[in-house]
Length: 548
Picture 1: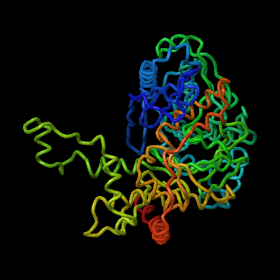
Picture 2 (picture 1 turned 90 degrees about the vertical axis):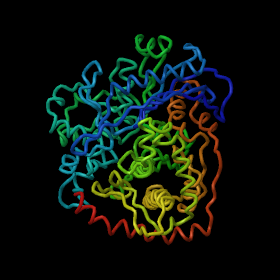
Picture 3 (picture 1 turned 135 degrees about the vertical axis):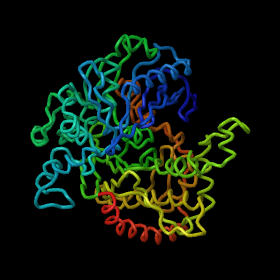
Picture 4 (picture 1 turned 135 degrees about the horizontal axis):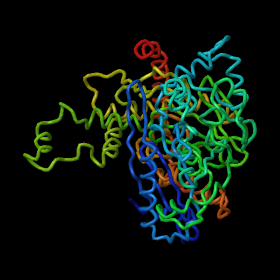
């Protein structure tokens, strides 16, 4: 638990409790009217890997961990319960929870990394004429009504629902509603089973032709066979759902009557918490995944490059969404599976230490592992000794979907060290962002003059410079970059409760530093990027043959 300062700090005034349920578990924070995170606490929730490519989480543990984190943050903040005016939630999304009418989960939640619904979404989008597996007539129907199309990898919420309907029909019949995590939290907090146009975007069944629509698209319900009664009723995007349940208020340490606002997904909240509320202000958020976002005044879609817009929680705006798949997960994979793995390659001294026969064992995964990664990558220098890295460990999304794509180190030699591999991971991820930016230019229709960098990846100083050099624009590194999602949820709650306007909250966001491109590095990366693109193209058939 920490009690961080924030550039917008000051007196507490009226506060909100913000809850950010990420893939690793929930973080809760008490945020003041001025935008200061007065205290925050995190509780982990593990991912469960299941046969057949399934990835699941326990929703009951989400709730228990959210309550624990909230109590800890409120206690650490020293803020009286009466000073907390409301609760705002944000969460990972395209994660599906089947619940009964009392919000009790009927099975573990299906995670956004879970592609078991792929056969069913692929069947939905097939047709003639076909472009990259998408039948033109059906796809145009989806784009007209929602602005998006089902993924062929089946990782969207619609794929999850169809998987349950076809392969767990008992759960489908028993399910009262299928919810996103943010709406699951809101249901448990208030006793009201609701959602919004914004939170239900991943279900691909909401009519998005007008902002804050409260209607599902009947043609798509008929096409998919999903029963309308299995979906939550929709409130306006900026709704206040209601007061917190009295029992929950006592459990969390909140005052009776504390209001709960409609939640928003973490992609939107991270952009808002980074201060990017104006049109065309670009954000690259690198957490478990990496995503490029910015607000736009209109709905736009490029299904061939997996880039679309979704209704923003901000009135009248749409948020460009270019979800690229694994981001920081690639660093975690390298560190936990290759560098600090607990396996037969452990040194004998470490084994004896673990058994208590020598000395106290060092941590298998050091607390400063990511700082060590940063230092090692910096030692390599631009170009990673000629090593290229393909970052699609969980399959590729934007700007070219490929469920069979995987990660790879290329051009490894006897001179290659782990510091080269570390640098190549960072560069490969930014090469993918550059590719995505090029595809997004057709939607945005203007260049990004500078880009905000947020999320845990923004803590890596080497990575910020790599972003500037490969993307060719100044990078604004957000102060307290891992707090942007929590702050975004708080900014929305403050706005919806009439405490502080969203534009005023965004103006408090500051930047730790601005990193300028280095021309010499840019020239080197321009050449390497061309080779990286060619490598990605040439390996697609190999990945398809191995993993298809």
